[in-house]
Image (cartoon, rainbow, N blue to C red; front, top):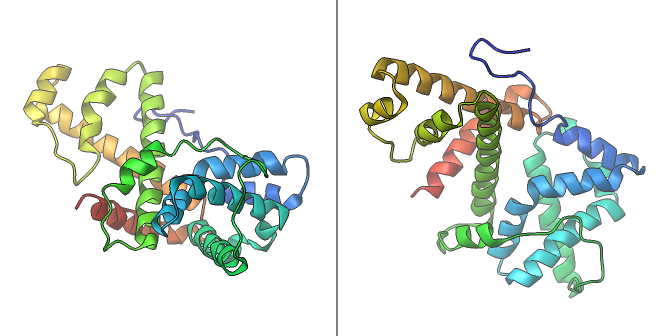
Length: 246
């Protein structure tokens, strides 16, 4: 089924985060694969938080993997309930507790001694850390990278949708208009490049932004107990991105 502007209604995020949590909680054969998917979705902001707490790169990778393992082996996800609110908050609170327990025990995760759910390619996280200042808190760094990840997923969905319509060149030309804090090209030049007048271009940009917001909102709503909280989370996301563009 297609929307009026030609986009498919189906999301590229078929499983909500709370649905995956339920699978992990069940403890069946699908638990580890569900946890691996959660790790793929959320490890970057969690890794950034650990690094910002002062751990070196190698230890941060181990602690992040160890945190996800603890969620499975200790059934911490069994304590999670969609009725409790934001998955973003649940994961950060659980990680804080995990790091506190490790520090109190005076123990560190030993490399090679536990399961690795996904390979952690931390290069882009390390590059982002270079831009953070000493005034930033680990929590604000976590929120920023969460926001960057959510918007990055939305961009990937839109790129897929435009490519399916054989309009990848249009998306490449228009995506610069999606981020409110980014410098945007001159509309007249973009219109000329795409072979359309400026009025048509402005309509295309308006639709592009509306679709972008809708995808982000749907992804955020999948992590909330109450979808009515999505607007507040959207505002939180925009504020985190604006802090990133300082």
